[in-house]
Image (cartoon, rainbow, N blue to C red):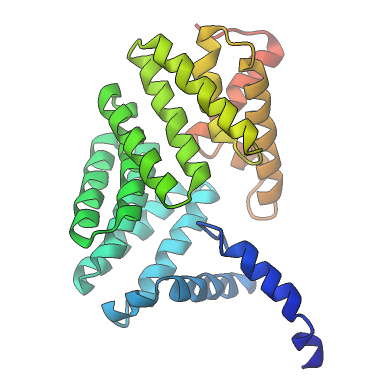
Length: 290
């Protein structure tokens, strides 16, 4: 008991660090898997205390959302989608609009990954509607995030640009800086697709300066990839560096996940991972994209 109590200063330091986080991922294999689920549930319960009013199924709903996040992170996109579909059904039965808004925002990105972009955009729109009803600006920001991915995949670049900018604004307001940067990068990508080259360059260079100043490149493989895709066609001198950052960060993340999913499987599990890997291979072999 005394040994546990002696850990108080360290626990306080951890709490101060974790308090700034937007998300937490609990991983466990075998006997540790239910422990990971319980840890995720307990953190969610103390983060969303008012959700207890939704009824006895609230804990199951939040646990399933956490589990879906784990499955998506490990590359099981279809499994994560199925978990969120069940979550949405449970939310509707219990009247938990706030959690349904979050689930709709999350499932939108998964559906885009699976190629069902129209349904993905509709899910994001439903998330926005529910967030507006509940006055939940954080859920709205994530729904805009899902909407911009779906709209871009459908080639609706002006619409994607609008959603990316709204997502960036909302996520910044909720101190989700890394996600806000990704949406800023997505906005620049859509500007380029619309042929607004001058605005693209200005937006990308401003974002580069901000991320450099914030030392925000750790694990930022999606952001580095987006900026590479924006700046490479413009002949920007940092395009090659950004591809290196993207591949290095993705490889490091794959190494972290190797205990839970084979490294090569992880590197090919999502479209983003495959795109980064293909670009890296093309550079190594001297191939150029047409």
